[in-house]
Length: 286
Image (tube, rainbow, N blue to C red; front, top):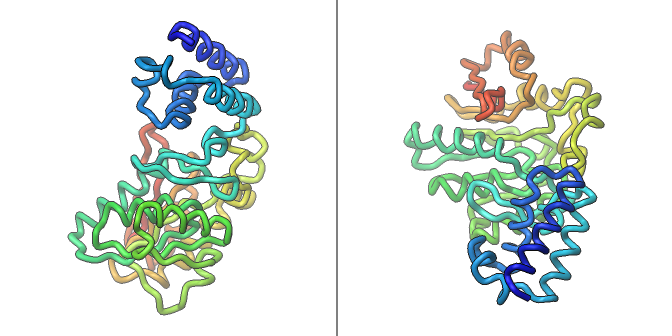
């Protein structure tokens, strides 16, 4: 098979994905081949005739066919990238998103700016463990407790911590928010990407998002049920000058400001916008 034939096959597959409503079809085709061949993108175009044989093509076509059903590519491949690292994912965990990288950046910046030699950090609703692993990898003095209500999610998070050789610095536990945290356990920083989608909005989400576990997405009529619990209980588990940082939905900034306005336990509230100028991360200081 020559390069011209390979180029034609890739173009056909790309068009197949476009017809299924996938805008990033070209990029996804390249990602599929990079994963199957374990090579850099440039190698596909320079040495495709040597790398792509019939066995590879059969696997490639099966993946493309699955993707046309709008099943997320990350679930099909069993992996996703976050903060420059590869993570295992499955149907038991939410696919990590670039927006959550902002939460990690802010947390890392806070610890560094405060010149903390060690930092006790709690990751609530860890899912695949991307926040816990990223924070631990980026901060030499970080000791992270990662909890989730889902045992299956915790198994995946443990695997990811082990893959990145960080399992000795991350403690995992089953917990519905703070339910499994002892009353005297305190942290310098509490992080969370909680479910924040309103029930009425759930059915309007793209098929790829609907593939995520529902309990990782939806939280009551306004999407605020878990966030309210988070805001209510966090001060009991924060050290003096500690911070609570969590991700929010596009229309929740003002609502959360109202929720915390009369709560004297918090000294300050900041709402950080993402690259799309959308309210994305809440920072509350005690």
